[in-house]
Image 1 (tube, rainbow, N blue to C red):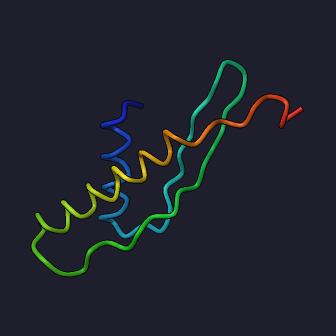
Image 2: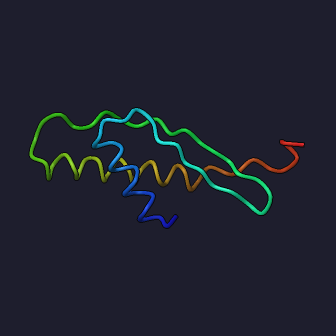
Length: 77
């Protein structure tokens, strides 16, 4: 999943009013999942304003996801 695809998926989940987004990734031998708590969607304003808010929040969450290190293999042995 590219950074843009991640941001779009999170943005769309915020706009749908979902409470969490499940991010999955993997390395050579294992898969990892991370539940990301989503903010509430903007309730007022035009759709453009609501979408802009969701996009900005999605960017922040994508930054957090990218900066979260994967657990080392020693933690799982």
